[in-house]
Length: 405
Image (tube, rainbow, N blue to C red):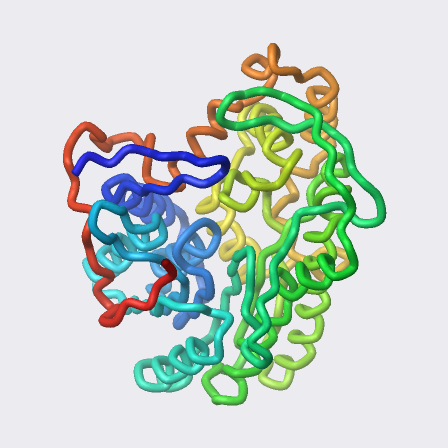
């Protein structure tokens, strides 16, 4: 069938298999074209491996020079009837194909990564295939809700300020209309639930389960991803409910680092750059900031996407010969180029001036839209969208499909 994008708000309900496959191939070729990551990981577990930073981490580990075996965990949906699969499903099909072509081990588990069942299934596969040799655990899970595996309670996250209402301007990425937005402050319960979903509790449960099962290698590393951002987004991000969750994630990193030191291991938070993702598109104010940031960083030649960021994380930080450089809070700062004053000052100036009428001139909204569509396999160079494609395809390593409706 011919597949076209169908967008509702900040969600695209269709995905293009050929476009997703080309996206994956492009990322693989990028990594293969960079200097090898010496001393890189050999056996890598990526929790949240099918899109964005998680997918880029998996690609970097596999094709970055050490030919790492990778196991990916995610929650995606196969095609059904005329309904396409999710982009993450198609991405994984393409990744496993690319890995198989060069003889790399690549297996995937599809299901609720928050559950004890999927943790145990992952551990069993590691024991059977890797003899307990996981030397890198990447935690890149993003979800609006989480079911507590112990209590069965469902928690939902919210994107709200804390303490007082927040007013600022934002942009509709579909129309380019700049408008004022007002967001009420979160309740105490909403704050707690957001921390339960987006904080570090599940990351800690994964590491504890892996340690208890004895499947972590000596000198194992684990990393989770976060974001800080500029002061203009603080009320809705860093000082809001998401920021509260990220604080918990960072505290978890310190706790895990102490725990892993017994095995010579370590735990890190990587503060990454602002990029167009499904998650960032849903946060008020942030899409406008990103469109201005893209304009400035592209002009300076310092703009990076997910794959460039993850290659730099592995090559320049996690496996750097000089060791891992961190900030005063112990975090890796991959947002270093974004947060430079010669970037932030121009962005702040543009923020004051930008309106609906000047959006095209002052921002890179077109580039942001293109990145959004590329998340789902659309607007990818080299793909003919006028041709029919087969939307049904299986992930080679997955025999049983357990996926959300």
